[in-house]
Length: 258
Image (tube, rainbow, N blue to C red; front, side, top):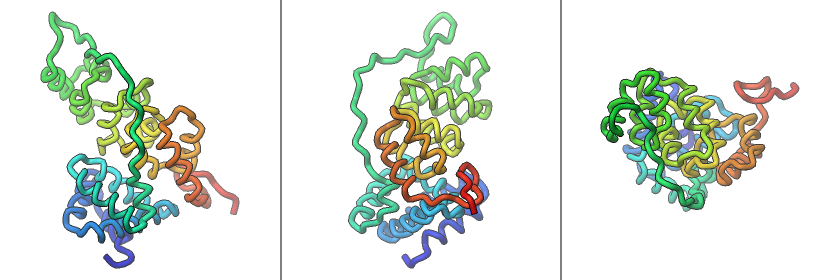
């Protein structure tokens, strides 16, 4: 892979208007390339995004979404190994494998009462999530099963505020937060992404890549929230040191005097 391959990927992604298609393109791009070449290109893209290159920063959103897809888990493992062996620091920061959060003994959560004469089965709750009334939607947002939330996140009636009730909930449920983090439709929303980054229960392997998409102001906020996931706070601290101030303030960033 020649120098400039990461920026070439960014230029190509910019020509793809649909967000979901961008992530799909990245997955196909990965499948077609040798891991060494793909790792070098992604490292270039990551370093440029860290340096506040707007085109590469926009492309990194699609890359993070694509790499969160469980279908490319083997590719992510190979990329992580290649980044470590090849001293690809930008890609290593994106794909770092933080230590797992300490497990907590929790009582199994019960589904909410949906009314009716008997508890609903999982299949019935998933079906309800696809076409809920507003009253049922409020119940579905409290359902502890990730498959119910996964079905609900695809419902066009769901709003960003609805998703935030789950993403910002304390204590959070890691399995539910993982579903949101892997949802390209919602994890690209700035408020949802920030809620995930600030939630102490976000799975580190999903929370750390999201940090790469935060602005300087958002990175500082992560550092101010002392109960955020330690791995996420560490990634935010490192990126804040590397990210240059943005002149005349890009969206979400601070203005610096000329």
